[in-house]
Length: 347
Image (cartoon, rainbow, N blue to C red; front, side, top):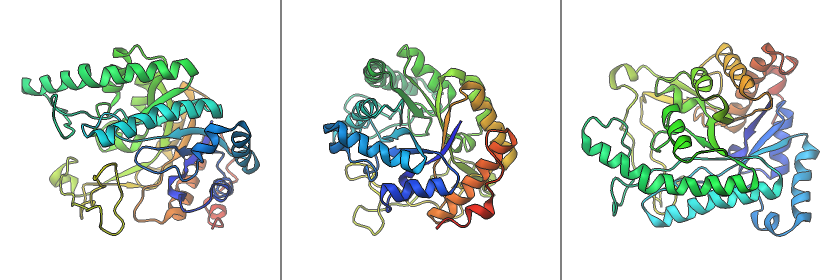
């Protein structure tokens, strides 16, 4: 099993420095962004696509650091009704598959996307509880008219070059839980489209990630290590909390999600928060999670995704790496010699 990190949280550092940071934390895997929501800060796409020498030089950076490039990530909105977003993010998925093949990488991580409620609609529509048949009409349109044709194309592309496309089960996407992941795989006769197992989005839906791994089995191709803390406010408002605020594109620190859309401001006194691995669920959980993944694939890559707003980029990575490595050591997947104290020396 490979334990590593998604390097987006180190986007302000050169790729060689980012890889050395992972190595010094005791990690041996890296997931690199190639498009979608975020720019490809650690991947010189044009050069890699154009030249084998450039590809060899790029991969040599990983070899030098003792870190394996295990996946490309192009999380985005490939089914967005706004064509400015859809066309770019959908093409980013296609491009990531071909780039992965050129680099000899077997996994591409992305999201399923979310279409409009009906033909001609201008905004994505998430239909999760279709108690009224009008929502079934929406669901059927989204799947049969939009999602299935696109994902059949992606399945064919991925199969042609033997690259696995790993879908993060993320709310506000058609695929957000094991049932919808299984449905997509069935609808497109998937052999090269499956799941990226990210527990964080499952926790706040009330899903047990270990049970989800066991249910999906061989459909799990890749995994993320990101934690979620359920807060006291959830007892009052539940986990479906719409108290987010607007961030305008021109506002300081605005994060673009494609087109003129931005990442919203998180609620104060939120129902739940993304936190570093170990700050929402203890080492015992993470050991059980790793054990479930090993049963599916002993060579599975598990990459930390750091989005804890209470810790800076290195604090969060240090904490997450120490937790994950301790969990692995309990399963004899890693030496327990790498401790939180040792990781605290990484700067």
